[in-house]
Every structure is written in structure tokens, then in C-alpha cells.
Image 1: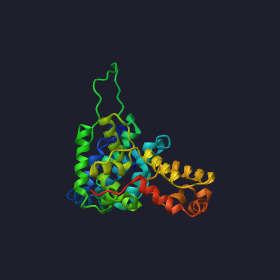
Image 2 (image 1 turned 90 degrees about the vertical axis):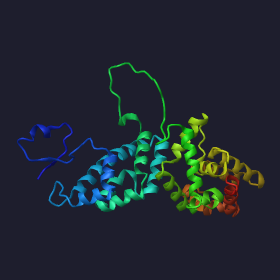
Image 3 (image 1 turned 180 degrees about the horizontal axis):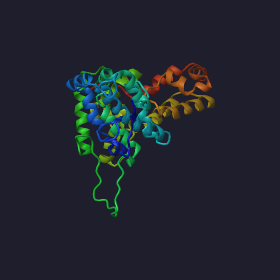
Image 4 (image 1 turned 60 degrees about the horizontal axis):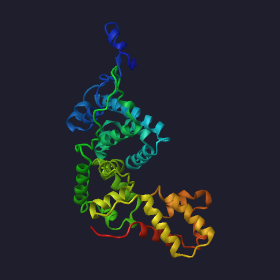
Length: 333
């Protein structure tokens, strides 16, 4: 038995004189169609009970194989470009946390799960198609190049937000979604009412909830930018609290700077201690959860949290608590 992948359609010319079958029956099938075939219970059962292209496989295996190939092409390309694109790298890191597997290895993970468990995985991560669309957008337009002999002319420039054409409609729907979910998600309630107590697991849960409903941090930032003509990187916590509490959007970097200024002025620090605190502030702009684990990770080469605590006169916990309080004052929805 032979399996061939036929990008130039040689198979069509040879099919009268051979019995080989191409691996992909319909190379034009979309990700959406493959996901539908795998997650629709009725279609999946039929595929599981239909023979595939090899004696030991089913049609469901063929569908999963096609899906895996398409995922591999998208996510490996994204991984290769992420090093020079911070927003893309951040998105892939978020997906890694959300999926529990590196995006570039998702195709292997699904293949190892098999059709039935892969179907459950995709159902659990119902925002998968939206997430992939966002990754494609961040990678660039080479996925769908335009080839024409005509002169280029810009007639209209628009950005769509799923079912919403206008950024204000998208943000209004986000506001409604947050208010509806507040009583259903304990993690979301912590973000709104007491963000300084937010755990990494709760943050992951919130991001997964929002991602699955089309409200990623990148999309929210884009919508705010298009609505206000201001680029405000407020962090996902900032966008949620704005929706729930009407809190003003403040760039996360500015929140960090204001909080650290407060720490520096409220205590009589030595020059060496101030130097360490300033180093800490530079690292904080990349992290939402601020705790000893974060300090250990970021300052591992300098002795971690233990060394910083020693330098600060055993006041590290106090500093972290005051930073969180200054950045996210408690409010109630």
C-alpha cells in the first residue's frame, strides 16, 4: 500500500493506470468543515464506523489526519515567526496555557488522542477556530495572498469583530457578557472585586472563558484602539473591570509605574534597595500575577525571592502586597 500527497495533482493524470490513493481526498476542505465533522456527534459516529484509507483506520482517522495537517501548517508557521513578533508570541503563550500543550505540537497531541478524544478536546476548547483565526491575523496576510495584474487601490479598510462590524458593538457585547457571567464564574468575580487575590489558575480560567467566546485581549485592545484612536494596553484585568465597574482604562505599564512610585516614596529605601525595586518594576510590566513565584522566576539568576527579600530587609511580601493594592484597588460590582 502507498500513501501519497499530491500537491500538483499528478494523481488525477495517473488514476487510470494505478490504484494509489492520495492522503487528502479534498485538499480544499476548510478547518471549519473538518472541525464540524469531528465534533458533530452524528457525523463522528458515522465516520468511526466507516472504513478509512488503510485497513486499520476509520474515516474519522482520515478527518483527524486532515485537521492535524492544517493545524500544523498554521501553528508551526506562527511559532517560527513568534520570536520577532511580541504580540504573536504572547498569543501563543496564552494558547499554551489554555490548551495545556504547545501550539506547535497541537497536531501531534490531537493525533495521539485519537478521533473521539480529539473531538472532546475541541468541544472543551470551543473557541479554537476563533483562536486560530487570530493567530493567522497576527502572522500576517501571506496566508491569503492577492495576485493580480491590476494596479492596487485602497477602497475601504475595515476590521471585523466576529459577528460585530463596529468596535463599539463588539465592546458593548463584551460588557454585557461580563455582567452576565459575573454570577456564574468565581474567577471572573475575583478579577472584578479583588484582583490582587487572583491566582494563576483563575487567570487561566478567565482567559479561556473569554477566548472561547471571542474576547481575547488582543481583540479587545484593537477594538478600543479603533474606537478611541488610543492604543491602551490595559491588560485583560483592566478590560474586564472597565466592563463591570466602569473603571477607566489605564495602560498596565502606567499602573505599574504609579504603584512603584508609591512604594518608593512611602519607605526610606537605601540606594541598593531602590535599584532592586526599579529592576522589579521593569519586570512587572510583563506579568499580571505578582507574587513570590513570579519573583523567583524573573530573578532566578540573582538568588530569586529569597535574595530579594534579604536585600529589602525581609519586606518583599509587604512590597508585593502594597504593589497589588496600589495597582488594583478593591471595588465591588
